[in-house]
Image (cartoon, rainbow, N blue to C red; front, side):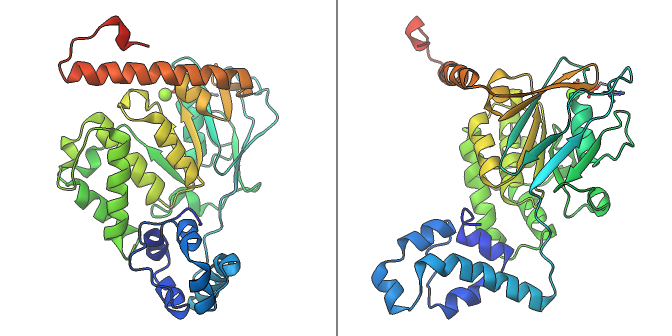
Length: 334
Ligand SMILES: Nc1ncnc2c1ncn2[C@@H]1O[C@H](COP(=O)(O)OP(=O)(O)O)[C@@H](O)[C@H]1O
Ligand SMILES: [Mg+2]
């Protein structure tokens, strides 16, 4: 919560305005700051004058939220702290060899394996919160328990945000209209601020500028993927994000993952991209439809990742230069 901006907090909890008012805190110019930044910049004199305690302000605020919600009869959706995969079977019906795999919030897991080996199937098992009722016979637990069946069917508060390749379902909308539609469906009050932030973040990820009035169908692959990621990270309530092969999207992949993780999400992604595979904390190796092994990214692999990042940056630069019509020399790759 400390990493959310004041604008986002107000969007989630409109009644927080009252809390700031009660404490005589003026937040009108602070919408873009995260709560942590905002509290940090309150001077000691100001704190004394307003009789507030900077150390306890955060807890007072969360207490306040809990109290108001209890009063309003709103139950806070139970937070997803972990996702557990229990073994099932391979395509040939042999038991999977791992014990169980638990992923905590803010962790990234990559899924690697040849085409057709079952990566998308694993993502689908998670999306469906499988309970032995898919071809793999896997079972999925949330916070260590069989999840409520409502996760499967409620479309508004989905357990999982799937970043799909396909944006055709929102044909004919401008970027702004799409985001407004999404904000509305989440009943967000000061949608404008939130939409602005999503635009900023998406543009940062895409590297190629686009605008609120750009039609969604007019976005490049990279731009639309960037939009989906920013939208998922900032506006989607889904605690789990599943990504199926985004490598060719032409976005800043490192930043995209950082963003998703900073929003406390659990991220699982199927990928053939070494950079993405090594950015994960854990790596699931799929063979013949089964989870063959679960590896932890080693220190050596992290070192390798740093070298890959540099190479990747060099390739990106060259791509940019070529786009601008520049003539390259061998020193452009260094
Ligand atoms: N354990 C399994 N048992 C039966 N069928 C499986 C299993 N795992 C995957 N499959 C099936 O194999 C096919 C290819 O899997 P898929 O997940 O699309 O592979 P990938 O995404 O790695 O290319 C799909 O039809 C999928 O349903
Ligand atoms: Mg696949």
